[in-house]
Amino acid sequence: MIKYFAYGSNMDLNRITDRIDRCPEREPATLSGYKLRFNKRAKGNPREGYANIEQCDRELPGVIYDLTEDELKRIDCREGVHNGHYMRRLVHVKSSTGLQLEATVHVACDEWVEKGLLPSKEYLNHLLAGAELLPDDHVQWLQQQDVLDSSEGGDK
Image 1 (tube, helix red, strand yellow):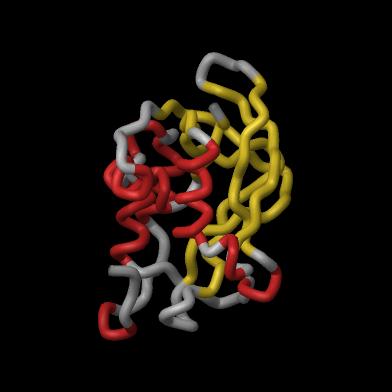
Image 2 (tube, helix red, strand yellow):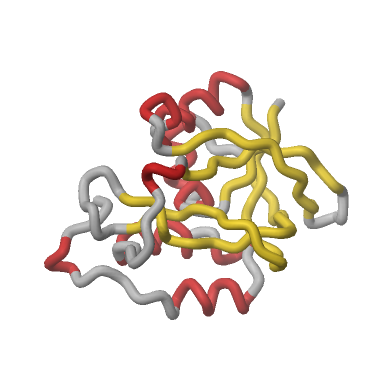
């Protein structure tokens, strides 16, 4: 099994279940040295930002899944790895029990990163679907994010 660290819309258990055709177990984890940004330009709306990570001196909460290589390839497909939207990167995360684990994470490719983007409310709701596994301050931060006006479209 491969450890997969999700910090964006794949924290939504319903979304990941749809993507891999099973309901995986998940647990909280933390990625040190990174913060969450909504600076990955959406393919369908150049004003919409999807989740991405950026190096800094903070800790980023998320969730970790055990996936098969086939399941991770399905996630890669949905994340646009083969089209140059995101790439896989190996990182070290800390599990809820304090174990240091090597995990795969998706990071936006530079050509898709842009300042001034906002998530849609629908997209942000996928992140909030993982709220029960996230620290309260991170959930509050997500809830306070500016979002695209509904007339500007968004992730459906």
